[in-house]
Length: 275
Image (cartoon, rainbow, N blue to C red; front, side, top):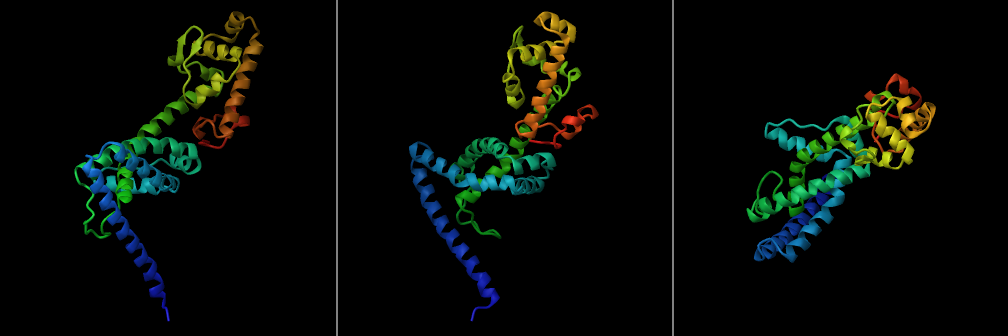
């Protein structure tokens, strides 16, 4: 007759057996790769398989916040504080595009470190006898991804802050004045990048010209004279673009932080931190 303990022990034993078998396969893989100096076609096949096998698990760890928690644990043990801001954590939970963007950079960095530390320097030890025993190559690789997550996240978060500032400049006509003067390359050109600039690039030529001239500090009447239209048409075009901006936020294409939704924007307010 099976008791509750035996029902628990059997799955744990099965997992231990599976891990032991995987470690034996990993030992054989590393020995084969070492014959070629951890480079060449055989290593490229191994590297691609390593990414493919860990892509979904890492996506899941980004979505449920466990990768951030593991990173915080690693850096905390090294005396370095690390945390993911709630708005960013929510975005990584809800947006597959955000997870894809950040994970690509994590993998690029982790692969370089993994080859050196785990393989060339022999950091992966199949005979390790710690509290949890030895780790598989996949587990070791995920650990390296956790170490790389901090730098990748901080860079990604700073980029989001910059784009949010650009988007905030388009919330109303007055705040268009400081809009990305660095995006103006010449008298008739914007340099487009990011979701915001993609939205600008999709607008009619007259709307783009109005946005460009507004950022250069021209008043509505001056813009109307230069473009041979009326001040009312200038304001209308700018209002329609502002509406398109909020529609893009509602659709998840553009992020507008809640603190940037002013009282004057009440009618078009989107959920705070919409991604």
